[in-house]
Length: 149
Image (tube, rainbow, N blue to C red; front, side, top):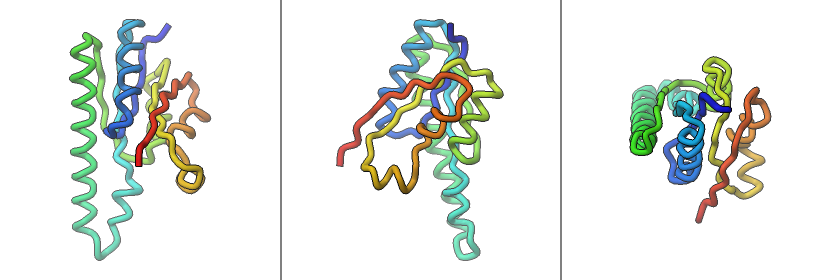
């Protein structure tokens, strides 16, 4: 049923439940698990004004390293479950890059975590998961995670 399952990750603790679901699904369907981390260029560009040029490099470097660590952590967990993984780190707007990846890699299922956030937060910033689920050409499985504090 599924040959390619995508798990976009931001490396946060809340994505652990989604990671478990994605690895389980890949194992059950003998599918390849694609793990994607998007370095949000809007965050990097926020620091690219003249007075923050050196900060821009630092922000990009930090986010890139965070991404590599997140991809490696998921790949290690998947390997322990004997699931084949493909990892990718890309730069751009998260929901746009996830949707592009789904189309380009012919993803059959995307598994995403979604943190429960207050209504004002969600109205102000929106949700990457929400955007992907509304616009994806493939099924999206949303794994809810509560955020304390």
